[in-house]
Length: 427
Image (cartoon, rainbow, N blue to C red; front, side, top):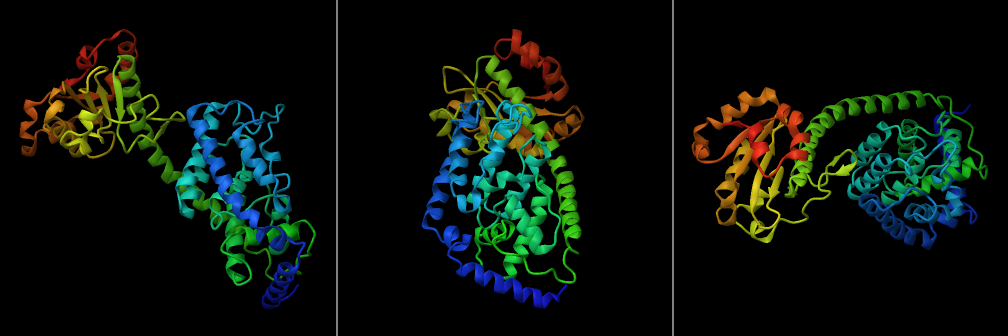
């Protein structure tokens, strides 16, 4: 055992030696010009994977897929990523990783990649990692971090067995493969290590990842542990797990709200399609997912021009669901889903739609869709003096229970607006 300061000096000397070694990963990979070019091509490849999954054209096999192309581009950087494709190869006896034959899991994987392409903070990336981890998809673990590294090299370090071994040797930790919790705890330790020796490493976590790889693969022995080595690993892992628990609890509350709101939107979307209408999903909800698919799937990409250019169109775009005449640019029905949000804002958007003039005057039916327990809230808002003109409009309250009980029969046997009017309650 040695003192912490002495060991820090030895680690610094090790890094300096490593940087000067032409055969080590710093010079052979990290400073390699092709590495930078790979970021661009791998990012484009990941976007292609996402596009194919969203379009339902990805298929059910790894071989020959866009994912194989991306992972091959990573694995061919053999200085550090040799064997990176092993985790993605289909293992039929174990049926892992379960993203080829399970379309729901495949879409969840695509959603992870899409969200991480679009976000730019560590908190967002970790939140999306937590989301995929909560689904416990067999065989889909921290090996995915290698793809995320090429999206966010300053936020996510590379990951493989040699890097894990190097991290354990350098920090006297007990990191195990296959767990996102363990990976995130290691990420915290890597960030600390990187901060301590930032002058010799880089903001790009590939540098410190390469150092750990060379230690873990036996090119360099780790300095003897300090007296207090390993003392913080359990605490670090416990902190990560506690953070995960808190985030999971908070996310469960948000997911339940989003799930119910999105679920009702999906019901109204599917019901409108069954009745022959064109469907518009609120512009700010189009990217939300229900049962693994975007809410906007099968819906209009743009409002008809006459609706999109009419006065008040900006507010109309935010109405949760619109049923639009299949032949004319006319809104036949508008639905505001008030699961837990302010009922006031939904009524205002309905008024904007009704009073906007032009072709929007043809709106026949408007519905405030809400849980049965919110009926009093809906009626109280409608009674406000600010909404005195509501009586002139055809707005009704559609409780969840009625929609739940009758939507399948309406979809099968209904026509036009008659059936949906019959289950709504007059306001």
